[in-house]
Structure formats: structure tokens, C-alpha cells
Length: 114
Length: 110
Image (cartoon, rainbow over all chains, first blue to last red; front, side):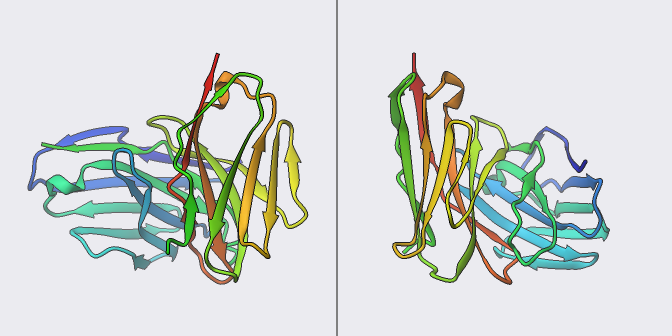
């Protein structure tokens, strides 16, 4: 069966520090991969998605970036965090099928910027 | 107009009652529909897909009305463990993204 791992679970970072969040998927090949952010009490905001190695689509212009160095690895990064980057970051995967398949989420990373 | 709209609630419902949520979507070309539930401070989890003919999974029934562009979720014999936020999700053919509603908050009262 497929599993998705996301770490760390919780992170506290100072403003201006770098960020790297990692997500890996097991048990499937060539998945679609997604990064979302959810601010407290708000809905999900799609940040990036990827349909293959090295293919990244950005949804929201900001100081975050994403990379997919391997088929089942998706990384979210920032060179300098802002206070507004606080939130609940979720990685998700789906089977590639033209968007007709549901997405499955990792446990999430709760990021607090001080 | 938002692509997916839901009544944010909260819905406070006594245990054992039946509760229903609706969700409207704006794109008539939308192809796939899902309901997710999200517990407080947790990740969203797929509750059920919504099929054109309607479908049932235990106490949960989902229906799709393409003419009026809405989907619904019915929960019968509600349990305390049903307390959560329910997210309506829509996708369009050829689009690798899902569009999530902002959710309807449900609290089951003992």
C-alpha cells in the first residue's frame, strides 16, 4: 500500500532563517505531488505541484520554492522566512490520471515563525 | 464567485440526528467530486468520492446534481466522532489540481 511521510511534524524558526521541508511517498511510481499551506482557521492554499521529476508548477508567487529531485521526493524550501510563512504545511500525492483521482495527505508540518 | 462554496457553519447537531451539507461549484466542466474530513490540527482525509448516480458508505450518503452544480453529504445517526470540518473538493478534466472548499464545521453534541 502507498504511504506518505512528511517531516518534521513541528518546526519553530526565526524570521529570516532558511527552510527545508521534505516529503516522500512509498508504494507508487510517478505520483503527482503537491504542497499546500493552511493558515490558522483558513482553507487549503495550493503552493506547488509536480507531475514528474524536475517539473514544478507554482501557484502563488512568494518566497517559497519547491523541487522534486527524485520520483517520490518533494521538497519545499525558503531562503529567508517571513512572519507570514507561519502555518500548517501539507504534502499530498495522487495517482496521475488527469485530476480525476483524490489526493492523500501526509501528517503535515506545523511551522511557527518567531 | 469562488470555484467551490460551502456554508462554513458551525452546525451543532445532537447525537443520533441526521445532518446534511451542500456545496456548490462554479465550473460546469468539473469532472470529479470528493468529500474530505479534517479533524482539528490534523491533515484532511478522504471520506468518499461522489459518483454521478449518488453513493453510500455506511451512514454517509453523497449525491451530485450536475444541473444545479452542487454536491451534498448526508450523515445519518450522527456520532460524537463525526465532529470535524467537512471539505468539498472538485476537479476538472485534464487539470492535475483539486479545488478545495473552505469547509463546513460540524459539532455533534452529546
